[in-house]
Image 1: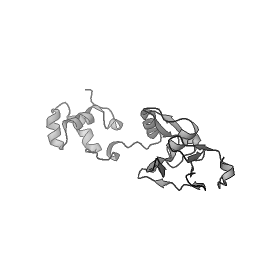
Image 2 (image 1 turned 30 degrees about the vertical axis):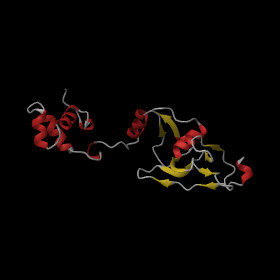
Image 3 (image 1 turned 180 degrees about the horizontal axis):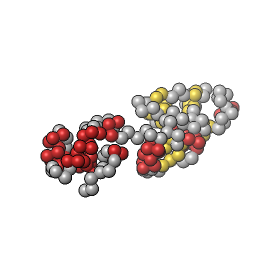
Length: 178
C-alpha cells in the first residue's frame, strides 16, 4: 500500500497504528500520516523526560501519540492493562522495534536501576534528607522516638522511619532492623 503512494522511505516495513487510524509506524521508529492524500513523515517532539511523541488527529481531536507505544502497538500488539513500554537500552529516543518490549512497572524500574538511571538518595526530586542525616538518623534511631527525630530533622516521622529501616537510603549501608 505504502509503496504505491510514494512515501520517501518506502523500503521500510510500515504497519498501521491500531489506536490511530490513518497513521503508520516503521520498525525504526518513524511515524507517517496518511490523513491527507500525500503521506507525511511526522517530525517527533521531545518531552521533558526525553521521550518522543507526535501530535495525531483521531476522531477530530489532537492527541499525543508516543512513538514507542505506537511502534509496539503496530508490530507486536496493543498494550495490556498494567503494562508499560520498556526501552531495553534505556535510551528514550531509541524507538526501534528491537529496542522495545512490553513489560511490568517493576521490569521497567529494574531496567532503570540496571542502567543507573533510577534516582536514589539526594538525586530523588524532593528529597528531604542528606546522606549524612540519614546515617545519623540510623545511629540515633534506638535513642529517640520517631517523632523526636522528626522534630530534630524537620521532617515527618514517616520520612525518619523510611531512612532508619532502609525503605529509603538503602544504598548507603546497613539499615536498622524494624
